[in-house]
Length: 115
View 1 (spheres, rainbow, N blue to C red):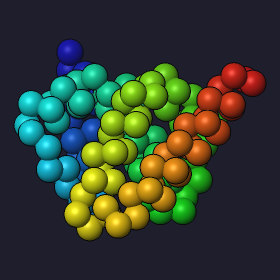
View 2 (view 1 turned 90 degrees about the vertical axis):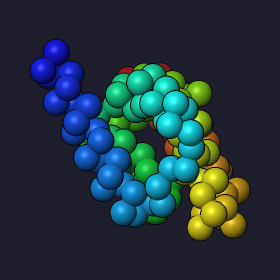
View 3 (view 1 turned 120 degrees about the horizontal axis):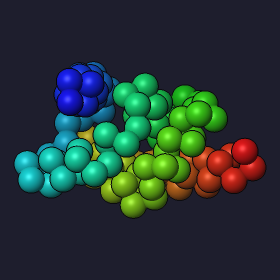
């Protein structure tokens, strides 16, 4: 239980750091908790940041993070990226971010199926 709490605490810290790069989520508290409980805890904090950096910056992602992303699932990936991309400061480039999200998903699926 302590390990789980430690991982959740670490993920909250990572999310706070990500918000320095990407504007904070403005979703209902219950929605945020639901997304957190079902999606974000499925991947490591480093991979969560790498995924955000790939979509919203011009970073690259490791094969191991691709495997984690595929394990997280497409619905979680799509929903979390869409919530970030819907922020007022990002909405003008939402189409670009959603394309990068889909490109990342397709690349990670291809890596996961060949491994």
